[in-house]
Image (cartoon, rainbow, N blue to C red; front, side, top):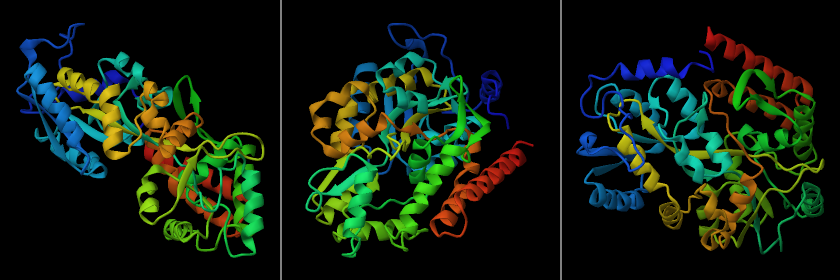
Length: 421
């Protein structure tokens, strides 16, 4: 499988399904004009798969869209994590949706399998933040409308910490100060590459080299000098007892949350998905962008973007894009935030009072300026497990940083090569 597969080849495969009924078949974008879609191609309805228990705003926009354009929008709740596999089955069978909701890092894999269409109107993404636009690009094409953005930030208990520390050196000092009391100044799941990436990238490591806006899976920077320095820095927190021994492996997240809600951890690195649980537990929660590393560089966290993408089997792409443009506009994106606390990557909302008055949302926006979208090319699937093993070897002191990084990269390269044969 080659990363820079020609879009023309993908389109040929996509349009081969033209005989399918309902949502099956190719697309016809030739009639798009400045005034909107051609009435002669107006469908009776379009179908969107929305996430579980997060469809009310979408249904409101769908109702207004139908009233304005005479096209019904059917909103079906499907667990976001299940939509990729369900599309692969339902799409070719002619009973799939026009629009799916997927994590942006799955875009490359799904598009490479022929299940997604690129947008016909890339200019519609001008309203979104640069990072979120970058996240939905694959092989030089835009593959969706960003819905919401997630990235880890620093969360702190205001009863224990009056304000967020600006540097990791401050957190290191705090951690040593409270260590004797059986408390922890800072906790992070740094044996998990999703969280550890911010440290490794901040010291100069990278997953795949960016080359002209595309990612090169043949250039892996997870064992370069900066990456190894990041591994060493991570190991320091474990080996000096600043992280508890239970903060490794699958139970690490539960252990961290328990220590934080019991006021034994002053600060943690976590994402907006954790907010409800912390607040329900009575934590006087504060949030801020991640502190800077000892080298003065920001922690460059991974960023995830939930993305509305177009099924390759839709016959209604023109109208689906019209609907998505309305669903994700400034007004409706703000409504989604108010309803579900998912941070919209619409550039104009960064200074909106509703966003700025919410500490977590503001922290995510601030951190997103230093965040790196998770690579969305298929080769990324070969990275997670080798890096997790390397990080755990360093965290437990079983292997030094350089060898752990070298071994991980070797495995990643071998797996990518095997999958591309």
